[in-house]
Length: 237
Image (cartoon, rainbow, N blue to C red; front, side):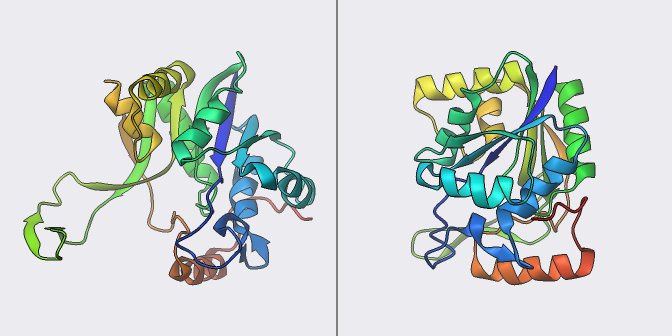
């Protein structure tokens, strides 16, 4: 049986601004998506990668990302959908019988580590469904449409969720099937599993596991790379 990573990178990056989708922007001279893929390429626990990108980008990604940077574990590049959930559903449709554990990770979250992948894989094999995150430390306030504070919300038990998230195959397939039948869209994959009535365990992540969505995230990403360097073996073009 095999563990497969699904890496959705189908976004247009509208919040980032500019013409280049965020997954292709460079950090330290290397596309964000490549930084992400390298960690899964290097992890001995990941047998295969299903990469999801906009349909029109598939030939360029095959040439300029997969082949150029020797990401040999990418078994298939799948066209993305209208929403992230649609993109992941497209990838799930290409699973084979041998794929028994599914790890789903944002393509623009490049500072995941092999150690964190190891923990989510072990957690999903034991519990069926796990996500990662960090406890919220800042004060949280509920605000109405006019910007007026309605109330201060207790931080007790509140976590900021990240990826990777990992699931036994039957768990994530059942959750996506139910969401599709109901026309429901969640904010992450774990929310679909929760909605299906299946328990999800939270695993402690770390603050540097950021999702690059805004221009200021690029500056922070450069600082993370400067401080820590790359997080796995070198895969050179």
